[in-house]
Length: 400
Image (cartoon, rainbow, N blue to C red):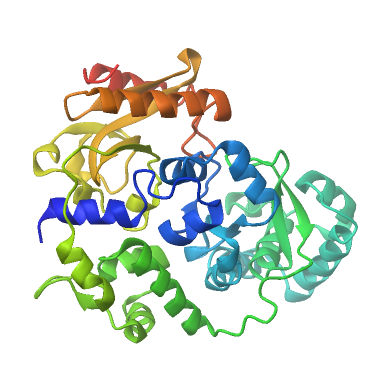
């Protein structure tokens, strides 16, 4: 199938650009997929690009528990809609928190009795009200054990994070951003009085199938390998999860699968004649659900030298983007970053700049400046740490 048609279809299915104006944040995430959250701006940019959502509207949806950041696929944190709270928690179980506990038991002398006691004490303390990690640790006192130099070497300084992760995946507690914002990693913990998992009776295998059902609605057509990355399931587990869905190839011999009831719409899809620009995060679901950057590049752009983790790298060799992206009908047509000292977006275009492109840059620039204040990719990102890649973009010549 023509690559332009596929890219345009993926963008349209994802709600780009502004395909859901004014929609509730929960509805946007239900259609486009769970939004990866690592202390960066991706959830905000996801909602802005699809629905024009202001930061205030997004924060209100978080405060009202219409959307929430939860351990989800692969045990990673995503912002998910309320209807998926239980499912996200279910598929998160057995990943990060479980592995850390196994390491602590094997190498650091941590016992089940010790962890169970700490869980009980933590729930008792949080029953009195939300606590930030420092206040919680102080009130728990001797129930929290310092794991010493050996624990520090293994990335586990105390026993408290071990049970906080497990209590979150069980839906017994949740993290609340202390300032209401989802682009910063300052949290308090609180009891979750209405545990989403109460009454959720899907088995782990059934939950993976339900996640797969959502995944292929969000991002299909996709390959089994794409889903394996998103789910962290092996070959056997992926096959088991996908089998009940009845997915079919988009054409004979293709490894891209989708639901049969969408096949005719895909083949009838026509690429819009006019550009449709969106400035989105490097972690936007259109990329991250697939982790296949090359599919969104024109052949002529795949040999471009773009910023990588250790300097310039060919675009075709990137697994993930290292900068935010400008897309047009699903094609990556440029990269961008926010330069906080100048309160401006610095961008590198792969196409001739047009008034429409400049207008979209100006719209997102105003949003970041006036509502976010900065546009971090992840929690450790900072204006200083991204200056080198900003200089690379500026040296590319196109854009500003």
